[in-house]
Image 1: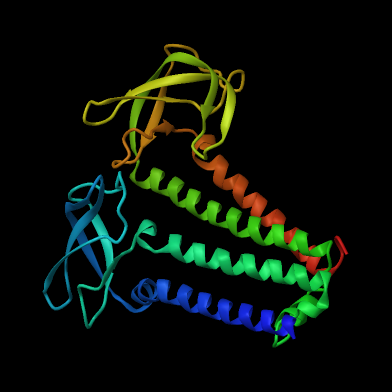
Image 2: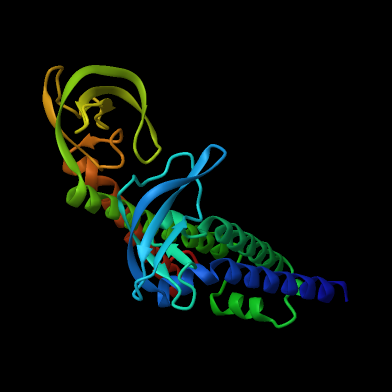
Length: 293
């Protein structure tokens, strides 16, 4: 009897969390799919304490001028005054609008709720694998376990693959977009090797690497000086003090320049893409039962 009560309580909890997940994303997804499109211009910043969000003005198809601010506030925004932003808005209520920027979608709250749902399901499936009496009232999880032939050995492997495949796929997509944006919108300037930094350095993907790194100074179009490093350490990098290199940066990120070489721009998305394909192939073998019974 206790097990049935636990199953019903968890089932209701998961249902409520799924409803909350849908409500969080409902407006943004609806505007993204069915909203009308417009091009807006950043005309200011809406400030809250030390955070700010861009204020954008756009014109509807009926000629109405609408001014809105973003949903996300941050210490440093990724757009500048006068920059164009794509907007999706409701036909019935144009002030209900969504900037078509990744940071403006409520992936944080929605991801937290979804992560909690997945956590509960994983714990529940683990309990069922340990003791079938913990099955849910509708026997959905036991059917899932039977369909994928889950056991204490296959389940952790499938769980790890279910995490790393979306992570690598999303990383491939985002870094590929960044590389394409650099190639299409990046500003190219000449930098010069001024020194070498020994010890450690933080690469763009957040990894800390050790070695001796060429330090490169460059000036953006406004004349402001910046210093970066080549992500390859000696002896992989053949640069010497005084050598000149081409640096590329995005207009709204003048201090985040990189050396304009294929490995700085494309190595990470290519690696993540390769890992995505490799993990998908491993997942296929696991599901077919030819790997890790």
